[in-house]
Length: 254
Ligand code: ADP
Ligand code: MG
Image (cartoon, rainbow, N blue to C red; front, top):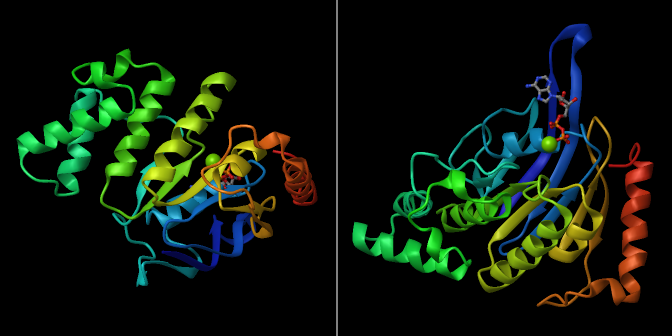
């Protein structure tokens, strides 16, 4: 699905040039959930803007579904850290827009589909509300739904729950897991949380401090659907330790 090959990115020129990513390669298979965990400043968001085509790498190539998309926009569904819903559209209007871009039928059927999805994520009664009345967790659910219903087959999630309180975050992880396990899409998730990465992903990539490069890859062995009490599994703390050590070796905590 996604192939990132030998990506480097530097900002600035001459003696002030700073290399942020160095020869980074990764891939995400069809329907796979991959997490990227790394110290802050290691170039994670830069990598997303390169994959999204908002910036061009200094070297290396990016392909989606075999097509070279280096420096091209429009090929991925992106969910930013802060929900960026259109404030002048209703909650339903925000979802309808994604469906319209994805080419889902006529106006009436798009409205009905949006209603159905919002009910499915527990927001049926907010269809006609405007985004500013939503709590942080609700806005992130709408934002995730919008990415899920976008036509692009790959979703990039940049610390989607980073701004939420711990309890809401846990609930959102369970919620995302249940939706994703039903509607598998290819996902690349940036997170600061080792637990979140283990709970959600098929594979975890550990990124080094700047200039970022991949220092460890963990195939997460837990079966799906994932249990909520994974921490009672013997392998949980062993894997947590391994990722933690990878991050320490990679240039200090998260
Ligand atoms: P992360 O998301 O892992 O925390 P970022 O990708 O946001 O890291 O940033 C990595 C480094 O690149 C930081 O040191 C940041 O200051 C630098 N950086 C990011 N974007 C730019 C830019 N447009 N110009 C110059 N430096 C940048
Ligand atoms: Mg970032």
